[in-house]
Length: 64
Image (cartoon, rainbow, N blue to C red):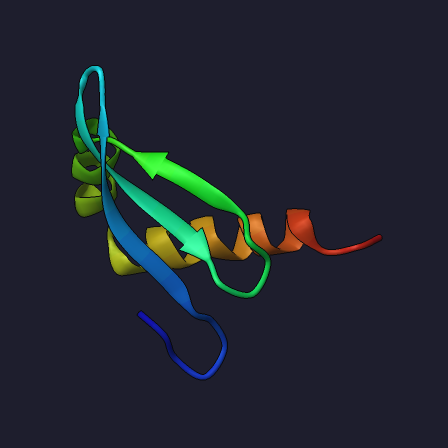
């Protein structure tokens, strides 16, 4: 998936506890695995809560 500011590979990844989504930033190489519990929690966020969550994560990752 990509847009004007990010590009992320989204893959299914088998683990001992079932499949997870593997997300890989094509810009930084950072990766994370998301399970169904995390995805379900993300679905419950309102658009404004999701925006606040992303904004906080981006600010924490910015150099001081």
